[in-house]
Image 1 (cartoon, rainbow, N blue to C red):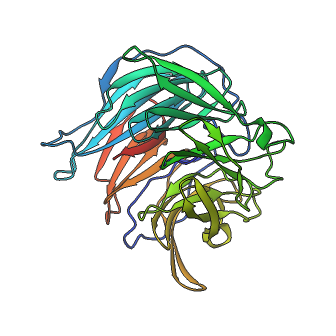
Image 2 (cartoon, rainbow, N blue to C red; image 1 turned 45 degrees about the vertical axis):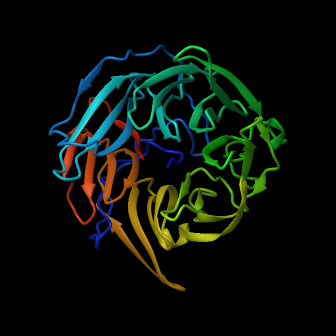
Length: 398
């Protein structure tokens, strides 16, 4: 699950059973989390902040592995950042967290099949972690300024979308225990207007790697976004599929049933975006197959989302005043739907993810900075894990 993630406004995540309606009291802080609002990363490269590990959590894990999430926190002003392993004991609701300093103030997190990833978008450094243990499996680098966004792996090869350099990086383990040979796949021909198709969200599909190409012109969605399938065996890109939508920056997510979806924002303030289903014709072969939800139904510009069911979406939207809301959409029948506004806070949303009956989100509000853990059906979080830096993203590890 990994959509392009923003650091825009602070939200509490709550569960989706009968949520109460509440208005947004957040304020926009204007920070870009390394990809988009149609722009490029303006951060500067710096050195690694170290790998000292500390424990920020409370409670213990009572037997078994529990639910595990990989998270990131970052401070753009000070160029400090870190990654975290958050563990939830589903029996006791206790949660613990470890913290490892890493990166230069702008991090993303991704999870594939064999590995999970922490991506330093400023310096171009990628930390690789074995799954499900999240033990150190090595580090490799791409060019500073390449702006690595998301990563996945297929058949022992790592693929990283490079938003700033019209390419996808490919990393293969070398003869050492933690080293990688790195090459790139040139994607410049997929955007003849400016030579950079803005590779963003990425996912694996039976021997192929799927990459969303935003295809922006001067940071605007003039042309339709595309979905490119790369054959992992020989790194061969195929013909890109026209998604029929513009500015597909809100993620590439699977439904609980495994169907792929793409979130798109279109033009900001116009409410011409939404979440589109992708019909799978075969390995690496997809076609757009209608919207699950539109921005007009959601009531704002789509920034992030997860699909909870065939007709159910939890989404983060941006309003006219640039504040955000967390909304729960259920399509009850043709032409009839339910939209609930869930509780939110300010001033910077930090990503959300779900696993089974658990939801986790990051709060950037200074008084409650950290990770909020909710069990489905609860209005208030069951656990809070503070962080020294503002949260920047989170993914559950299967």
